[in-house]
Image (cartoon, rainbow, N blue to C red; front, side):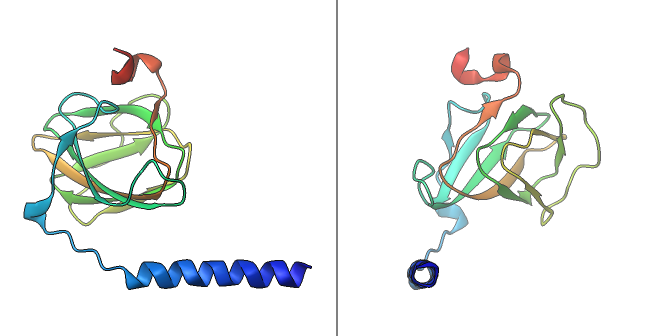
Length: 152
C-alpha cells in the first residue's frame, strides 16, 4: 500500500512539474499593470505577474512598489516567500515591532521569510520595487490590527 501511494504521489509530482515546464510566461516591464490593493497601505501598488493568489497550490509572482520614505508595518503571510529587490533600495527585518535594523538592500538582493513569520520593510529617499514569489493562497495579516488598511 505504501509503495502504491509513493508511486502515485511521484507521478502527480512529475506531471505537475512537466505541466509547469510546458508553460511559457514572459512579462515585459512595459506590460506590467500596477494596481492599488486594499490589503496594503496607501501608496503601495501591486502587479501580479504570474498566477492567482486566491488559488491553493498556485505559483504566484508579484511585484510590489513602495513609495519613497515608506514604512510597511509588521505583518505575516500564510506562505513562505522569496523576495528580491528589483529597483530602489529597501530595508527589511523581522519581529513584531517596527525598528529600522540593518542596511537598505540594493537591486538583486534576496531574502526568504517562512510562513507566519512577522516582518516589515521600509524605503529610503526613493521608491523601491520588490518581486515576491510564493505558493498560494496569498494573504496578509498585520501584527497590530490597527495597521490593517482594510479595517480603517
